[in-house]
Amino acid sequence: MAGEQKSKAKMEQAKGKAKEAAGRVVGNEQMEAEGRAEQAKGDARQAKEKTKDAFKH
Image (cartoon, rainbow, N blue to C red; front, side, top):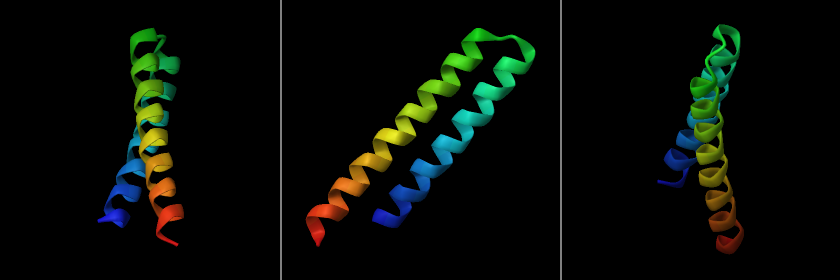
């Protein structure tokens, strides 16, 4: 389960980066903001999983 959540976090981060870059290229500020939000969501998920791992060991 934890591995699944970690991969989800990485996927959200990558998707967010791509969306932010695409928004920047086409000049769409809303798309850029959505990309940054997705990255933040992925960062939060990753931090949560790292915290869970720290308490396991």
